[in-house]
Length: 428
Ligand code: EPZ
Image (cartoon, rainbow, N blue to C red; front, side):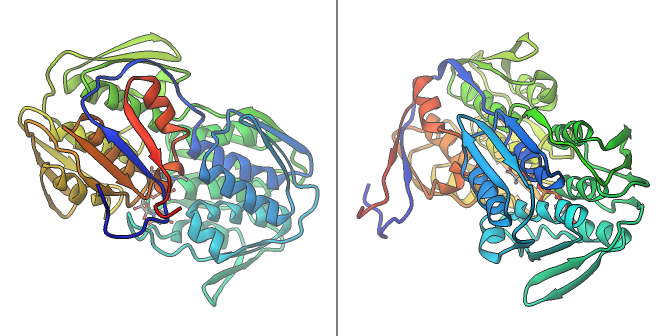
């Protein structure tokens, strides 16, 4: 299948139709690793983080921390970090554009050094993704923030205790606020916080460092310290990678056992898969098995903050609904533009109609292989899933989006029986 333009990025070549069977080990969580690696800025002592996934985004985070002066060593999913002193408090535009989670350095830089100059993240393909809530907490804590030449220039002498109710539930906003307030010895109160497992994994780390954090419902009481200890932590498994493999095993008519998961983090995903007709068996706290029973039933999905149905699983379930026996409704409540996978799935024969944040999906007999283009991390995962079940060959372009959040995906899928290989950039 010749594309009309020279490809500078890699692609996946997939032959659809193989049921996935076997066992797969899930990697550590990308969205827990990122704030936890950044938390190393809060202490002069050495830190050890285990089960860190080998992803583009984790390498980007380590490159950013290195540029700030943190000593970093990444070996076999273990990262040693030490921020003895800082050589910079600046997160450059190129870095933030590459990974918007770079904004997570703001809180710890202000807490440790009282200074941070970070490029405004700008929009991204799935939505505006403003960070007004992050900045509101810093201002309440006494930070001055000047926006100039696209950078946020922030300074705080001594962090004041904060009492704040988030206007929206924000994952990295909560993480930034907790790390910022780790530098304040007085008691702060944050209300309407995010409770994603990744946020709570960071809370575990901050507690190990000596931060007092008490959480009740969506309220956190935080008391930090000027001298925080180093930490040793094993990152939780990636519940979104796990969910992606669960959908893959089900829609290909297969039988897949996932190992190294946290079953308790997968409640909403297991419920929806069972509703769609999957056999989901919990084998232990960290193992579960997903099997097809031959039918795929339509669903009504509405994304929500944890423990609701995760927005990061919406694109993957859209593919499931494309093959269901009937009509499904998918409501995306978290981001305003997270249906970019739809146009690509329509090229494969999907019958989907999107209006605002609602997608109506009418099940079709089958999808057909095509050349499709990744736009963002989870959209690209959905295109791989579609390729696995489509009749014929699918080429998924620009898989650097995918490599941000899935470690060795093609190897793991091949081990389960998929016909998939990574194509080099064309003309290379
Ligand atoms: C985190 O992004 C995740 N990224 C995202 O995963 C995930 O989709 C998202 O949370 C929702 O669960 C990381 O953890 C690195 P938010 P984040 O702040 O923190 C609005 C993936 O695929 N908002 O919870 O940026 C915002 O616009 C990525 O791994 C404000 O209005 O998301 C969005 O509509 C994609 N003001 C909503 O809240 C703010 O100050 C939720 O955003 C902050 C957020």
